Image (cartoon, rainbow, N blue to C red):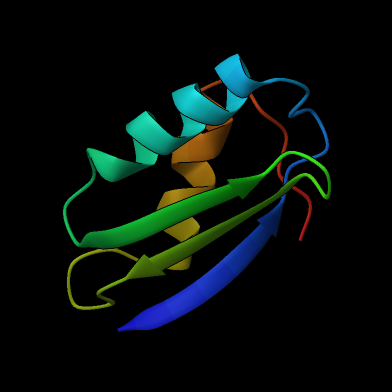
Length: 69
């Protein structure tokens, strides 16, 4: 298992948080997703045999949020 954190400055509300969490959780190999609205950080635990950090970054972007890391 690996963990990575993404800076997503466009997260502004619980709706944003929920959209990101549910979008990432539907990906194969995701173990846990945590969104911190205060710091605008998304932490993801994942199995690198199934998904990469780059795949997760792309998913966040396709959901409509800019990722800075």
